[in-house]
Image (cartoon, rainbow, N blue to C red; front, side, top):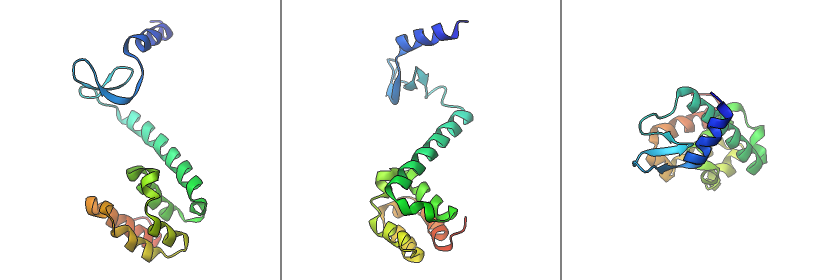
Length: 139
């Protein structure tokens, strides 16, 4: 097999799509013809994507909130968890929560986290993250 030649052919034949789309057979597809309906992704691929998502979230959150790097790991993880779920733009909409975190008012931050549509949509997750924000310890 000539790997480089095959890759070039497949890129030409399949194209490169960075967002999911429906192929001519109606299958959810991404990348260079990856059929997600039938093949999905491997655990290694999922963990690779997660590692990339974590790097991106850390970079975005620390750039948007310079005080973020002074938080302990447990509280940093709360904000990163929120960023992964909601996107960094979504996290930044939590103005009251973030103001309380920046001021070191962790109980008030946790309470503000609970007063949101996000808390109504994923209550168990938010409760766990509220506890983690309050205590500064992993839960």
